[in-house]
Length: 309
Image: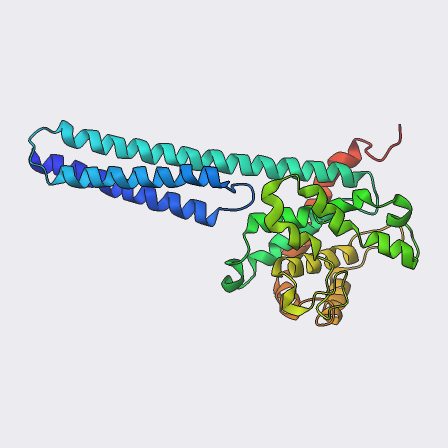
């Protein structure tokens, strides 16, 4: 009976330690802008870690206590299983919230862009391409960028264009100098709008600098590796999308044409290494992104979002 009791307590210790490590891993790997914890909530999280450790210590003390009562083994084991189940229910709930938030954000951007033939899902396309590039990044780069953060930075890259007059935004010809100065304000406007969401602070620079060039001739004059890596990824995705998508002032171009243009832009405008990585991605995966956008935007087009009532 003593052996069974101690075995149950030992199982409880193992389960609790495993749950604690899983919890720490989950929040360190998934600590993106959606699961971002304010300082107050971090204290709650650390308290939970402390509680898990305290329970482990209590179990360890119990295992060295002589007892013939099997209940003293069943109770710790049951408690550890309940902790494990409750923790995983929490993980599942967080993932569901993240998925719903992404869906709602895409719908919002889709509704806005469906009104304009020159946007027509451009931001969603940039997001799809940026995430595809992320998936092919060397592991050394992924430690500095959370995938979820890149998702929202690329999806909201052009939200500031809502503050740009349509006469400038949709002008078919070359912009005049004063019009160009107005257009260049859209990243800053976007950052100001997104300031309302406190956790978006960590991606504000990614959005602000997505029109920088490697040679320093971008909107704000940042050069080379001074430009955030995420901004360089978004700039590449943005450029590809602009080339292959239809605009009122230009037809779409093919995948091959786009790759040719990206290779020419690699160095002065775009990050050479990122362009090389992008060109190595199988063509069907890149073109699948475009198909996904058309499918998502078809709902808005079917419901006459461009029709003036």
